[in-house]
Length: 239
Image (cartoon, rainbow, N blue to C red; front, top):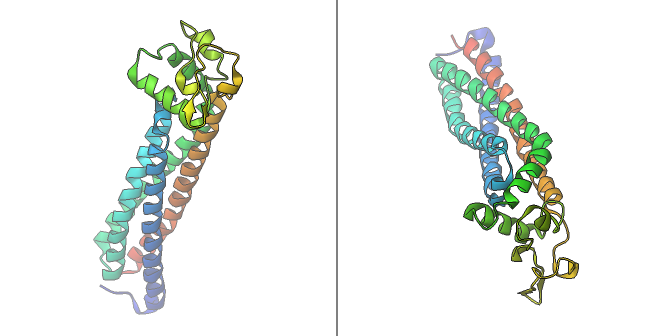
């Protein structure tokens, strides 16, 4: 395989440009996978209170495509270096599919970012009623309140309004000198209770994660356009 004499310089330039592009795509795939994994497991207890699987689904999509990109970049490099047309064609088709899937994943993160506050508020109010009865939800609420130093949905009074019994969990209690202070007996003991509601803290946290993952996903997917264009150009130049 080779180039026509008139296309030799152009073909060499496209070939090396594709090698550089695939190296960048390889790095981008690794970065995307790492960021997505971190987002999935950082404060993972929050996903029990999201009220939607949209964000988790989008992150899984981006993790999968990030891994595939890292593997596919080797196919692109070999196809370009060896000038194998069938490999370049396979690379183009697979890369186009990944481009579409990754773009969808990035867009889903932004859609989730717009919907998270409404869906999370409804889900949090619903799950308060199951606190103490559902082990998973109970652990999620305790980890949320202790981890983000918040209490209830909009405030600690939510535990009295939406839960039978009216007692707030010990996870709402502040630590003084390394020890939890009792706060279930007095709802007005604000100096002993986390006064911030968990809704604002949690939605801000999730929006930041969704924005980061969505931005990286879309940025990498747009960069794949260079890989698609270069592989197509190199395919046409090889005679």
